Length: 399
Ligand code: PMP
Image (cartoon, rainbow, N blue to C red; front, side):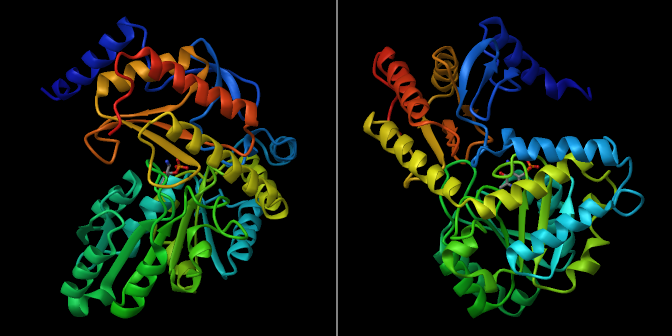
């Protein structure tokens, strides 16, 4: 029957709820700052929110959102193609283009809509999408919708990418290479210097999803492409407002004048209501702030270093390098679940990631660091991991 396939998921949820563990769709009952709140009944430090620069509670962003709601109303009640393009959306597009030093920008209602829509539209039947195997769901979804041939290369493996580009021969002219700046699960940075070099050598177009790297990497916070010095080689940068800018929404910028024509072909742009004026206004303010206050980025990296080093010293299986995403890999799904719950009870909220959302068969306790965390909060997070680890008979196994 149609709904049978959902029975096993319902069973798993019921079992977890029966023992008081609700890791997916945990409810934030109260939120008092960018780093503190009450989740599932527990007062916690928020260490899994992608709020990298702590912008969600910036008083200037809140004031902008309030003023915009009063001036423009609570919603646009229409799509960008119809009545939903307000002067604020256009202003944000111009500011984003300026931020990236390009002429063209499109603002979407979510980051998902931006990446999915761009991948689905840029390539079509007869074209090729060459994507990193660990790509975000929005990239996979867009690639599938595009009707293009999908070829995956091994995660951040430039030898594998080169092999596949070489095999494509003349078809590279019809190929869209898609990578992320910082990968969302393990926090590793794509080897963009090498990828850009391959693109120069073999041809093709390059789209970089900077969802986790905008505001986080690069001297001006433009992301991994800026940090690698390859912005001129990137054809399209997609990103989100839901992480370092502390709101919701997404964007795509490009140095290609044709982006303006592409805009009117992207279904996730055409057939959905535009972002609310309050959101757009808060993003405009956040963009100005992250540009004017690079010290936030410095603070973020100091905190990332503290957390990464602290967890590593506990013997936990963290990723290969310091990053604002610090993921602790745990072999066993049940152990991951129990540890997630114990962390919550110890006053720390992190993301629980289990297959198929994790990049391997293993599970993860994924922390994301914020510039708004105090050193004491980072110490608390490390102490909570230490206590949870020590309480286990053999400690969390190092993967
Ligand atoms: N791309 C990547 C790489 C992401 O990690 C995410 C969100 N986790 C998105 C796109 C979608 O962004 P949003 O949640 O803002 O829609």
